Length: 51
Image (cartoon, rainbow, N blue to C red; front, side, top):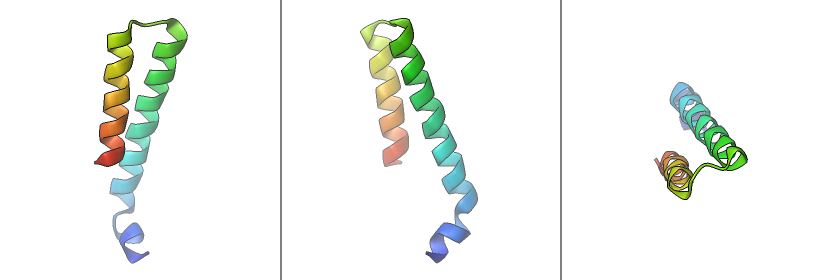
């Protein structure tokens, strides 16, 4: 668990980025954006989670 304490700032930055991308995905779905925009948001969130 020492790596969590050492890399805390980087981990929080990643979690906040993912949260922002998921919020953008939710908004795109709620507003009825076209499929391409939704797929881009999904890919962005997935990339951040795998990063």
